[in-house]
Amino acid sequence: MTTHLLPGTTRVTPAGTARRIGAVLAGLFTIFAVTTATDAALHAAGVYPAPGVVMSQGLFLLAAAYRVVYGVLGCYVSARLAPTRPLAYALALGMVGTLISVAGAFAMWDAGPGWYSLAVIAMALPCAWLGGKLRLAQLARRAPRAPGAA
Image (tube, rainbow, N blue to C red):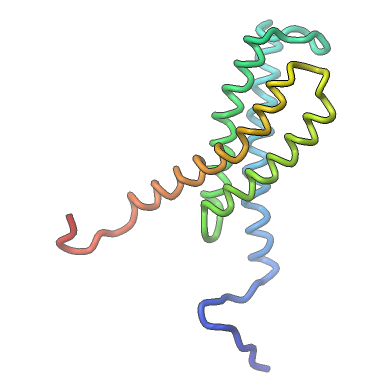
């Protein structure tokens, strides 16, 4: 049996699908793992108050700052593991992050300031874009240059 594909298309296989989903999940896991570890370390060090006690505005700003860094890192991981189109995979994770952040905002709205929940939602896609662009820049540096190209 011969399968005909359109020019420029590739066959979708279960292994390929798993790799595509795995790239996004690996980035998501990276974000969750490093964020949770940092939160726990800051609680253990006494920087953050005991669970259940509302943090100060400054501590929420600190949390937002490292979540930006970790969001970029996680989206870079997705882009790095992507079989093709790294920026698309980073942005896919950004969309997942946006949806998770919206759900978290609804669930935890009274746990902290509203600006924090809105900031977490707003930063998901810019972090994804930056993580994907970092990977593209890395790939561009590795690309072979044509002889005589400046």
